Length: 88
Image 1 (spheres, one colour):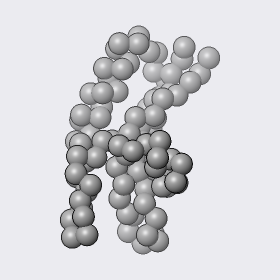
Image 2 (spheres, helix red, strand yellow; image 1 turned 45 degrees about the vertical axis):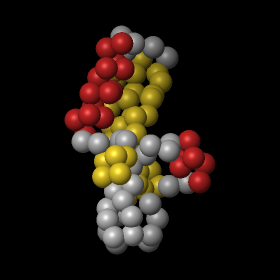
Image 3 (cartoon, helix red, strand yellow; image 1 turned 90 degrees about the horizontal axis):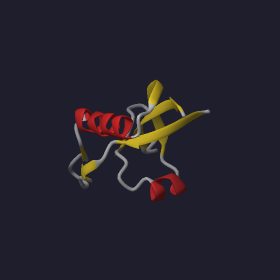
Image 4 (cartoon, helix red, strand yellow; image 1 turned 135 degrees about the vertical axis):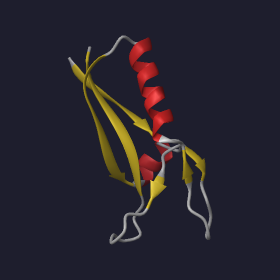
């Protein structure tokens, strides 16, 4: 059966009116993914990076997600997700 699991980049500092938020380095997110793969003996099919728009329900369930604005877009916030597709 093909499944997927999403890993969200953690926010270290949410920033403020005059400052940008600070996120964990990509290497740390990838270390968490690798640890999960090793601990669960996962057969990885693919890993992709997804930019998802902020939704009220998504934000409440993904409270550690990294939010930022994309230039040229409206004031919508987006967050980065690493999606791991695997066989189980």
